[in-house]
Structure formats: structure tokens, C-alpha cells
Image 1 (cartoon, rainbow, N blue to C red):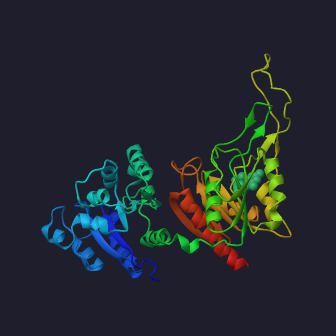
Image 2: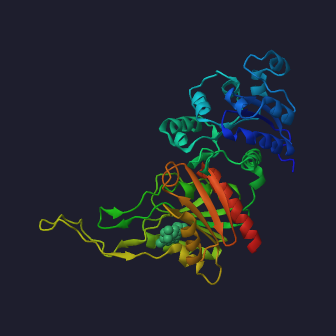
Image 3: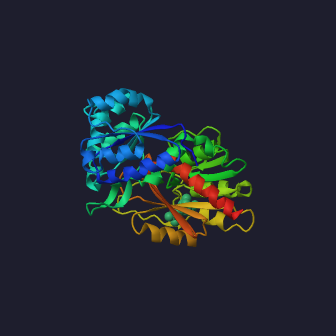
Length: 407
Ligand code: C5P
């Protein structure tokens, strides 16, 4: 499909091993109708030649900032103006640092400075370099300036390390470009559907001033609610206490405890086509809630609190015999993510589970970004590190596809 017809993409390649994938990336973008011009850093030319990229893109590739031949065909400033998107792929730690510092010391960094088009950054580097605080701060700076950070993916690296830092696969980048330029393609994907979801933590009182809770920020659930509303769904969000605003067009029901959340959810399942349990519900609550503030005991250095199990909200929804919504759960794990997620899918009788590894820094709880793998009974989809808003889009697209096959 010519989904990128009329789109001008300026591909900025820097010197990482993933640069060899730019030949395929360019070809796939062009297949979909995009016009692609290339700028490369000096180091990138060690990994893939300008001649190869020129042959594939059909346009001369400038050799340097002051290359008279290339400047005569389209100057680097004209190129930056021509672009509808500047895509930095692979973006090495060095390129990211130079862009964060606002430098214009080669063609690629100059193109970023000189464009008013959206800039997309696809990081690619060794996992240690990626996790280095300097790189993380530079990426956060780019993100704060409105640049789009796509990836990286995690897994085995060319250097033998395992961890986050691999560039997204060319097809992943192409799909994201398509989604980027065509948000309207999903604007009515959930039209006529009702989504009920939970988000945030619960608070389980010990006495009038103390409670037990967890670190859930509610960001993932709120992003899902906002995106589903944008996709045309009728959204009801049952939320624990969080510090974020309710998204526009979403009905919100505020609760504190797991029992309240359970009650509010169960009274609304009949109308729901989809239920997503995104809340970090406390598994246990104190058996007794003291009516008065508990006092420190002088005669003991320990305090024993008996906890009782809370209802499992999502398991109650998925056990419904009539009007059972398509039920999606979340699993935050610190080890054996796939194994635990699949057993949770089975045990809680879910239609889909979104699993994330919360042991990896910069994703999951409280972060704006996350990386997830979606599992359903006979399939899975890997969603590499992205903003929670972008991920919520992909989750809801996957849900709507599964919903169709079920209907
Ligand atoms: O068993 P675990 O708490 O890891 O399962 C996580 C999933 O179950 C999430 O979707 C969460 O919202 C849901 N859950 C629930 N009620 C509980 C505990 C978890 O709905 N009491």
C-alpha cells in the first residue's frame, strides 16, 4: 500500500553497525511511496557506502557539509526544509549527544538544526552506552524538545552483550512512520465499543492517617484511556489515587481501595466490550482498620499486621458467564517474564496480557516510557521501548484485531 505517498523523509545515518539495515529501510519506505534523501556521518560511511545509499534512494548522497557537487543539486539547508520528517537511524550515542548539544558540525546534525519537520531518533548502541546516565539525559533532552524517540529494542547485540540498545527493525520503523503520518487511520477503530479500565494504585487503610500502597503512577492506564477515546471508544476509567488529570472525553470514577475498585468495575461490566486491568491492585489489605490513629507501643519493637486477600478484579471479570468483555491484563515481572505472563494469562483466563520487565531501568512504573510484550493464546507481539501513549495505540490496535477474530 502506498501509505507514504508524498512524504519526504530525510534519513540521517550515523556510524553504528545497524547502518547496514538502512538499505532495507530506505527500500521499504520507498515501496510505500516515500521519497528518501540520505545524509551520513563520516563514521556511517565505514558501515555502508554513500554509493549504495545513492543507488537505492536514487538521489546523490552528500559527502560532506561543503560538498560542491551535492550542494549544487540540493543544498543541505534545502534538504532540511524539503523534509516532512528527519529520521535519525541508527542514532549513535555520539550523534544523540551532538544533537542534544545543538551542534552543527556535520551534515546530519546540521540537518536537525535546520529543519522544522518532526525529528525521529532511533537509538542504536551498546547496552552499557545506552544505559549510561549521559546518554539517558541526552535522550531525555531530545524527548523534552519534542523529538520522537523510537526504540531501542532489547536483546543480543553485535558486540555479544545482551540488553537494550538494538535499533528497531526496518519494518518496525516503517510501520511507525506509517502510523505517524496517518493517525486518522485508527481514528474510528474502536467506534461503538465500550472500554472499561482500571488504573493507578489502590490505598489500603491501616488507620485514619496511614495506608499501604505501591509505586504505580497510573500513566499507562491514563494513556490507554486517552488513546481509546481518540479511537472513538466510550471509555470509563476506574482510577486509584494518582496525580494526573483525567483525559478529555473519558468518564472517571475515583476510588481508594481494591474493594471499592472491585465494586465499581463489577457494576459496569454488562455494557463493556473490553475490560483492561491496568491498576496495580493491592493483593492484600489490613484485616482491621483502626478507628483511631495507631499508637507506638512502648513495650514492643515490632508490629504485626494481619492482612487478608483482596478480591482479584480481573479474575472476577473474566469469570463472568454472561456479557463477559474481552479481558486484557498487565503483568509486571522482574524475572522469567514470558513464563509468568503466560501462566497468568491461563490462570486468570485472560484474552490478552501485556507483560513488562520492571527490573529494567527507565521503563515501567512511574516512567513515561515502557516496553511490553503482548501475549494471547496463540500469538505474541513485541512492543519495544516507546512512550506509553505510543504503546497504548499499539495495544489497542492489537486488541481490536483480536476482538474482530473473536466476534
Ligand atoms: O497477579 P498480578 O497482580 O500480577 O496480576 C496483574 C493483573 O491482574 C493486572 O491486570 C491487574 O490489574 C490485575 N489485578 C486485579 N485485581 C487484583 C490483582 C491484580 O484486577 N486484586
